Length: 483
Image (cartoon, rainbow, N blue to C red; front, side):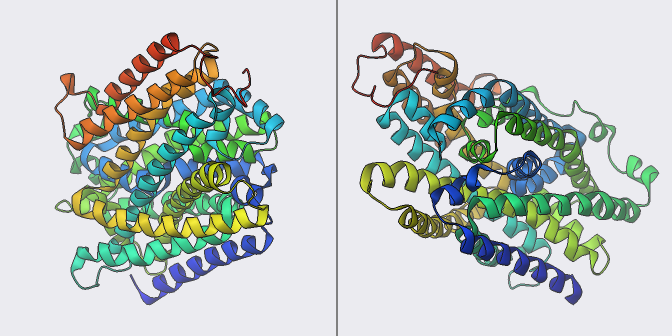
């Protein structure tokens, strides 16, 4: 990249930090910081949802899948379309009705009304840990992007990923600490527009030109790369059981539901998000990964798109597209960091440690906690860089949360008999099962992912304990409501 590209990228980052500072001066309390004052439009929220869900992990990770599988990699984001639209139809009307009456701030707030404080506390801890790991994956995605574009000349070559973690992590954490959710949502809109412009009008045309045109592109890879069946059924199952349920248990998505004005706006936002995930981003990300394979075959697949940006685009344009991809990364990282902080401050500290905390004090504590968690996420990114890829780090975090939380949350929505004891058992058994199977790399039957067994174990425990210890036989009825 040239000096002009660096200047463009730097100017973009300064602008992002300014937005964070602007909202830092305007945020008055925790409601402003965590749910954007509950008056954000469907268009802004919809683009923020897709920017958060796809983000850097899935954009850089999707490029790596496209490098390895071709267009079949697009099935990863097809699960996002299904998850978004199912949530819009079945989940949002229920939770938004409750939110309008009770004024929720977090995802555990919803489960607290159904299962009580003890279950909500455990949910908060699981969600906070999951999102902390997810943030680490996003920081690593940003580091890989910058290592392939901005810092390729740093000492150690691609070991400059470690140096990039420090730089990119600082920008992400500083911006998130300052601005809160409203800054995140409004900049997500701009960031997603920049990303789409950069991919459609710059990255794709210049990549095809560099390859030698469409005909040369079609001849450069085996035919299987241009089909949609170049993926194993077990891989599709893993994506399905890991990604679709996250739309039911994701703290980042609940915060955006609460940020919408009403149910109609929230549902519209989710329909917008699903359409942008598939086919728009799904095929663009996979296609650019294929272009990277043609031009730079012997590289880390997840470094394909970053190197493509740095090598193929002319002076000035590389900086724009690099900023666009970094926008996607930041839009997810900041949301995940806010989610983890909200779980700890809103669901643990405010309710169980310092219940008399003032609104202003809670917001300031939230900023401090966001800073601390951001530093931890940078350390996790460094560990992930030594042991695996971006997509692996993200799917591990997803798997843990989904296995623990998906079944009890479905019960909260659709099974009136479900009890706090059943929910607690489902959370602990499901999360532990997947964690143990993943940590010890257990070979599972039929090539199924650990998440599938975690969800099954969670369901068995949830149903069994609900019948053994029915609702009303525990002390956690306080604060419950009938959905």
